[in-house]
Length: 131
Image 1 (cartoon, rainbow, N blue to C red):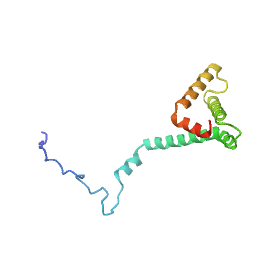
Image 2: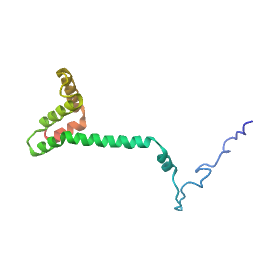
Image 3: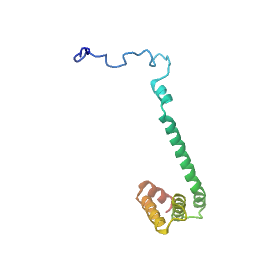
Image 4: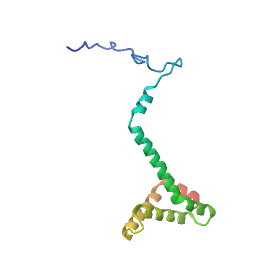
């Protein structure tokens, strides 16, 4: 037989857990917080760490693709348009390969140029570069 269902106000007091013995107390007593325990056993944290490492690796790879272009741009050897064209060419070569059919390369180039033109943040950055 199931227990009695109580009416309004018959439940535990509002404002805190019923058993507060293992939670942090305001007096400074410490213990492992629930969130810390959860994070320690959560297998997705390893995935998140791997993802963050992968993102950092991708950012590093992007800097590798563009570092010399940025140097040439800063030195005045390239204008903003030429620098963007050079970076787009490198992205195309890296993503679809230099041996890809010209029609595919042109479609990817057009899509990248359109994405750059339609992005207000990138447009502002390009204008700031003088492009």
